[in-house]
Length: 76
Image (cartoon, helix red, strand yellow):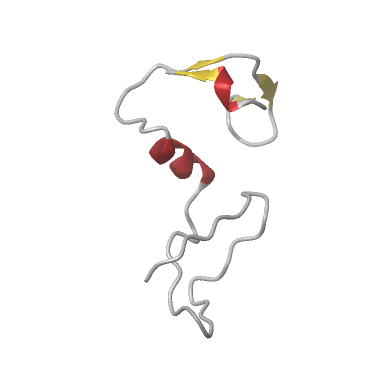
């Protein structure tokens, strides 16, 4: 039997070797937010994305970072 546990991306990640009385393994504990987004939206291969109402920020070594507060603003 499998159970699905979801958590917010801002929460700390769970250790890979975590086990308990009712479960023995956890899968996907080190999956990145980008990977989850690409899989959920079924984005494969070269793709053009239109991001409306994006907030441009630079907090990292990336050339540009875009944040959207609403998932409806992402158009494929």
